[in-house]
Length: 519
Image 1 (tube, rainbow, N blue to C red):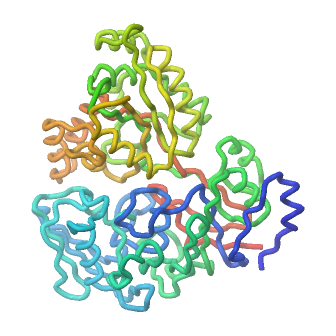
Image 2 (image 1 turned 30 degrees about the vertical axis):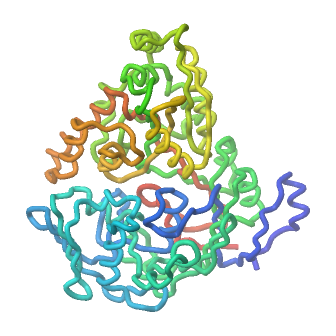
Image 3 (image 1 turned 60 degrees about the horizontal axis):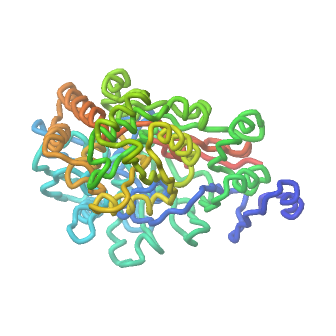
């Protein structure tokens, strides 16, 4: 068993209650603590980072991102795209096994596609799969995907956890799939899920790594991966110091001291694809008026807020797509993004008919964690100085997503705007957010729809870049999508000195197959 000091003694020393693993961890286990739990192990039923991180361990993908974020073959040993962009053919690697012992073949791939694209229970990211007209499996190792129109974002999507391959034997699990059981081909097999507490995974003895940028090409070095839910950041840090935890998401305020502590290592994810931004309810006043949205953008001093709230741990984002993603051009976006100018904000509000006799009183929302509460308080003060009163509401991300959609579909009542975050590998995220009817029933226009359709059907790189620029300019000028900063959530990891081989892959994907726990 892993050697630990007396829990009672160390709890007194740290001033924090111990976490207490009900399934004791051995020296060959990795214990990873996060602030929250996955909401499902079904890759088609969620969009949260907490869930995606779990999928990444249980399932695998046809393609994989290399260290630079470019897609390369993985479960598929080859990929061929037709000249007209309307057909993509995958050839599968041999010897891939599902966790239940059945061989993984083209029937499983077709099952995954059919399920994601179904009308009854489609993937929440159905639009990201593209305008697929058919999926065929002519033999056990071949999959042919045909499209109604060319779709430039399809190949990179095949490397994202949203496109995780699901073994068709999951069909027999019925309602238990994703909630009590899950059969994948990934490096770790599901053993137990106690919701709100832990996910226990064991090493997949038959795993083969064909495309992920790590040294280990076989099963994980560790015996088990235990993903713990530990909401309190200080409790996570205490658990790391005592040896009960191996990998944690740290408290932001403790990052400076963590950097100076030789018993811990801070890891910072780069090029995460994360974009934190303002979006507005436009189904009713005041944000159905473009001038009011622009006033909000002019009223907030983002650089000052980030300096106070994050002290160099994030960077200012000026584009609707994040740094590291195709089409992100800070200089270009800066030409269209409203600059900090409180006097301009006041003038716009006056022009729109708002002032002391007709004040604005709205709700400003975001989701828990990531230091966002402090940032919103700074923005709240800045907005008050131009005459916009805001009430802050903070909730879990699932509740926020549902609330945003609900508010967008209301035509009466106190209006809202929110600080939202999305992570993606391609500018096609803008199609999913802003093409009608929109991911959350938000802003859309025929003009924007046409540009977004052109963006996703343009395959030529240079031509597509020009369309991406047009979309960015439109969203920024009309203050539909007001970018704030990147990264924005779960981009910091701390490992104990006993952890070797921890690596963060492109787009903030922890890769744990190389990890060893030393004594």
